[in-house]
Structure formats: structure tokens, C-alpha cells
Amino acid sequence: MKEQCKRSGCGGKRNTAAKIEERRTETIKLMREGRTKAEIAERLSVSRITLWRDLVSLRERYKTENSQEFEEYRKAQ
Image (cartoon, rainbow, N blue to C red; front, side, top):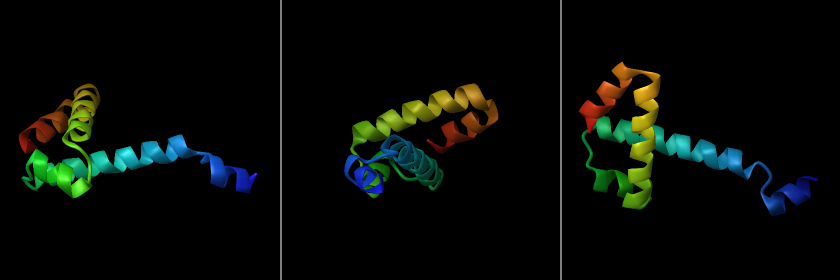
């Protein structure tokens, strides 16, 4: 079974979701540092489209989960 997972990537979706979450957390950190979107995309080695999708997702999450955190996030932009 272990050998099969090595080849087929068992748990790949979970790992991918974790990587996306980690990237989005880093995006917020970089925005708070005052980095531009272009700088963030380059630093994270993602396209501007990927960064844009992450920002849309973060906006939606913060809007629904915690309006105060969302306001902080917006100020960082």
C-alpha cells in the first residue's frame, strides 16, 4: 500500500489544500509588510492569476468569518 501511495499520491488533495492555505497565510503576511501584488506573486513563485484567486478567496473568508480581521486585511492592501 505504501508503494502504491508513493506512485499515485495518496493524500495529495490534503497536501495541496495545506500548501494553498500556507501560501494564503504568507500572502497576508507579505501584504501587511506593504509588498505589491507583483512582488508577492514573484516571492511565492505563482502567477498573478493564482495570486488574484487567493485574494478573492481570502476576501470571501474574512467577510464571512470575522469582519474585524477582514478590515485589517483590506487595510493591508
